[in-house]
Image (cartoon, rainbow, N blue to C red; front, side, top):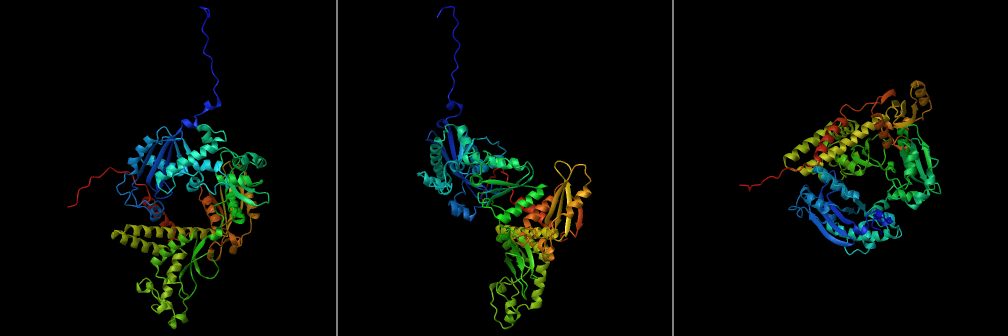
Length: 601
């Protein structure tokens, strides 16, 4: 090169596609697993943590310890995990463990099987200590497995199933460190499978589970004719069977999301693979869409809907109509002259409410059918409750029909709306148990009372609404104007809107004139109790949707045909007090300073 020639500038070298991300072989993963006292980070605690650090298929370290949850471990958790109260007695609190784990995982990618569960507990623990969450990149092996494994290969994506499928050396046993070790082997097996899809970097791995499936991409045209309006949408298969029912304020935007990577639920992706058409139903208001969704789910019972499919499974607490009435849990409310409390969401709620009512009123609890002639002949069977003084023993003549009728009348009064006897009896028992230091029994009694009050408050709200022959209400619409609803015997009979600046009265009159006719025996049964959607009336869920809408800001009554009130001594006031007490009892305990202990003298 001549002496006076300038040196050549360095030439830029074009990188390969592999240089655009972090190669998986260079990524350090920390596979973590937690054992807890329950399923919610809000009211449950961690009992054990286990983590394994790996990079390039090589194990770099392990982290594991039992944790004192600071509360009793439920028996079913002990049966599941084998972790007993004695095992965690001398274990550290998680507040002491968390800093060490965060240092162990610093700069790494967190991996967990069902990552939202484990990461949710870890984030809650950081928040409880006012410690910022480090923002780890997270990989969920459940999402990866659902993306690459078919139902022909594995029946489900449980950790035990995947560990067997990949022939993991460690068998999951609901202990944190062993489950973390098994998850490491599942992760390596999944990474091998994902490699065939061309995934070689961390960035590609994290986006892989969110990428739309071929079925999703191939069916985007199903959303082409869906309008941008509030309403309900139905996914149907080739035979016209309804697969899924949903609602949205913007039908087009919501339906299109099913065909993009934003939809990560594996059941929804499976449903899209079967769908052949989407049928939109435009609604005037969000309330109409919510109600129509409930009705369509109850009518079609789509296989991919999980909630609201079986409103007929609601139960009732019934005071039987016989000479010596008793409380019974039944599946339907009949026009038989008996007193009912409900509907209740589950049999367990009904049993709790039944037990609370028995605490206040000494009704018989045996299931035999007592008649006056059977008692007179001495043929009735006796039980231990009579000997304990918990029952007047009408079966043995301890109480005649007249004396027992006083108890039955008291129970009817409570079920009709006056909950003071139940609240007073339960409060007295809770105080007595607490004074005797029997705190667990007192807490069980409190929960029993709360179940009864919630059930009674719900029944009273629904009964009041079902008793109104017609209720017309309006509230400001999001885009201006008004939303108007016509409710008859608890059932949404019509819904519409009044444009901005228009005189509302003509619109309201037209809506009332064209509203659905709802007969009292359909919308509400005898005594105003809702009969249920299965009989053509308003179901409990629909009525609660209407009540939430009526409770919304800016809503006011336009017309009312009937009396819309709740009992003076009803459950609403007691419910508010109990809810506050329940929230205080289940609030997370703030970490306190260590207390020095001296031996007792």
